[in-house]
Image 1 (tube, rainbow, N blue to C red):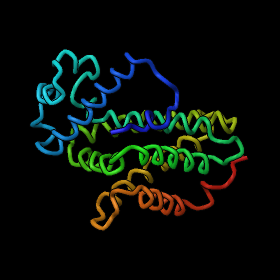
Image 2: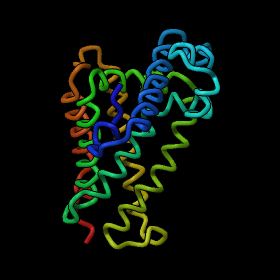
Image 3: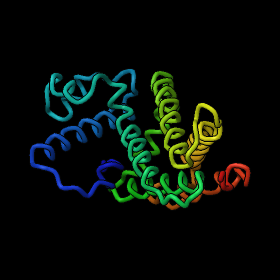
Amino acid sequence: MATPTTAADPQPVGLRERKKRRTRDALVDAAHRLFLCHGYGRTTVDEIASEVEVSQRTFFRYFANKEEVALAVLAEAEEAFLEFLRARPAGENPLEAMRGAVREVWQAVDRGQDSGPAALELFELIESTPTLLAAHLRHAIQQEVEVARILADREGLDPAVDLRPRLLAAVFGTVVRISHLAYAADPDAHRHSMDGMLALIERHFDQLGPALAGSWR
């Protein structure tokens, strides 16, 4: 599965790094296949490593535990989102910048073969696995703090005094999550195209209204 940061990063890398990246991606893919087939709780680290024909020691060079490998794709997507958000045009208002950044992330995902459908399957796995959902929500809180910091920097605000950056970051994260869940739950969704996913996210954002969407300056 091509990850968002891989698809979004055009910088050349050396042979050693490419080999490491292939091994890491293979472990992520194997873990997701096994989780979806046998369940997260029943899948062991040994089984994931065996699927890729590497040792358990090699697995632990890349990931601390099963939880980390299960959330690896989302973690990379979150990092890509932060990079895209920092790079958005300065003239965009905060919500415009966030919409543009999340669009870039999903477009990067769509460039990877079968990455979009696999990402949606991953959301379903996380939502149905209490351990993973708790970990994902912890990460989401950390992500909100960083997003709020970026928005505050863009707007020249002090996030400790002005509550709008943290509020928008929290609302934004919720909108994206419910969009993913709604799309994944739709039996008629065209899982092999991200156009429907992006359209659904955009419709959810449209509901936020001018209070958050307007300029803060």
